[in-house]
Image (cartoon, rainbow, N blue to C red; front, side, top):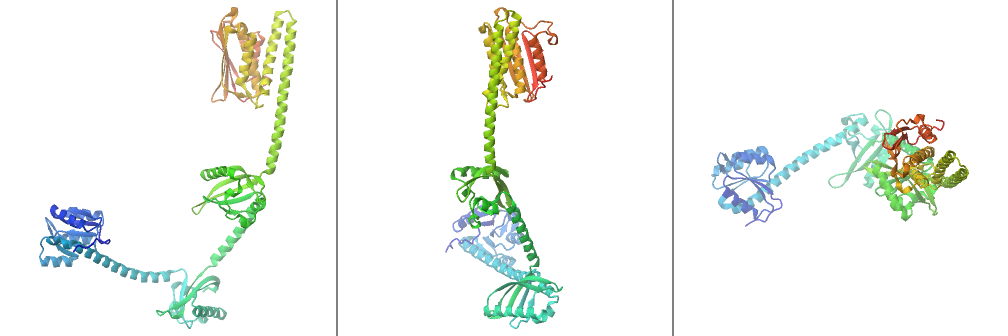
Length: 607
């Protein structure tokens, strides 16, 4: 009869066999009856000992006689390396004396190779016996350990443990109890509470004992108790009925421990909690603590209740989303995730009061972790008045910006009037030099008017778009001076640059003079040519480079800017100094003026 596979059978078997044919026959036989069989094969001592050291096996199968090795030697290895492992000898021939000696040595069973049909049953029986032996040994060890553990536990408990009979006589006390009583156990046994404590306290203890024995229920109480040093201690006492094997109450057993320090700590914590609550309630804004990721309100201050109109019972457990309109909840979720991700977030939001009002708050969110739990904490301040003040300030600022734009517009108009007067005056003057001087002055005034026009149309009155301003200025100069315009090309390479008005004015005047000079003198007799104006930031944006160049006839060989009598070029030199810049004149052919100056530096108008 073939036994059915037993779930307790080993899944890993080590087989010692030098014959591959016999080993395969046994493996096939076992594979039919043992589910999930894992079988390792060793052919000599070295392989056998190496496998025993590598992993635990549930069963050992061994041929009796191998070259240079045999079953008794293999069993010695098993007993040394993995004692208690079932060992079955599977061999073709063995005498009775050898079998007896092998069984005495600790082998579990023996199966002849011509009776392999017995092998599954022998394996099952060996495993069952091994399991029973291990269970029995484990139970015996557990019982011994339990007794030792109980004795050690009771004697080393920090609490006092005692037992009394129905008459109130002490029958047991652990080491801590004896220390608390100030006497060894031999002197305490048989004594009653009346022998150990004041009469009033002894009477109370006896009344408690009788109550426990009469009711059969546990008594849990806290009371004062005199210590052996005479000091009063606060103790917690648990008393329960002591029963025999027939469930008859034969006394009282109990345990008590000193909780004086705990009571003192609880009082200190209560005081600290009152102090912390006072601090939170004194905050001018609202305070909140939400669990994460639930985002349920766990802690808040009084202001949170009063400013939003809720009662304490209505606050606990509220979701953070309950304070916001549905369309704002996605932005609230993002703000929360930002705070939990970076550790801090600051945002403005309107919270819904109980009466439906939307109150603007400035809210902080801080990631907080305590006892492996995450929280979102923060404070919020009602910014209703700040919002009103901000709105009033914006209105005032808009009014001032409108007024300033109007000033720029009127200045531009006045400069255009002056320019028109100069044009009319120039029309009545016959002398060519005087006429040209008036025309030059008119263009300079026009460059200033153009700047005020640029600011009038700008969204930022504090900064000037220098590239846009210079572009308009150069294009107007070309329209008025280039003759014929088609012969001279204007090339502008102006990087977008913002600067203050005090820098834009001298830049515009300087470009006006240099471009005018190029158009008037660089291309005589209708020559073709090119005027180039470049503006770019340099030195990581801390400086600007302004370059005006042409490919015309160039400057005289003996030209010296410091000795020139030209008002325009003298003005160029003065404007470069006013901008605190470095002006250089490039070599020919043509003419090139290059000015480098710092950005954001207010020019010195006195220079």
